[in-house]
Amino acid sequence: MNPVEGLVAGGLATGFLVLAAFFLRFWGRTRERLFLAFSAAFALMALNQALPVVLNIPQEERGGIYLIRLAAFLLIIVAVIGKNLKRDPKA
Image (tube, rainbow, N blue to C red; front, top):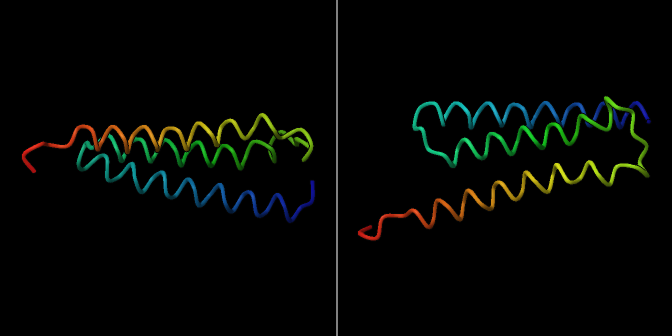
């Protein structure tokens, strides 16, 4: 793996972890499940960026790693749909 690719992946993973901590902080204040889902999704995105670098997986064999990204997006979709279905009908 190219050292620049590792540096970029590390920077992206760090940014995703910062976002996960940001949403976890809001979840701690509000106990809103949507914030917890966003925090978990961004943690999965960080894992998706870090695993190929840590495990030194070649570009050709990273297909399975993208299932983690799929799980993160599905988590966000389910959380948003759940939040909209739970909406108060009086509002």
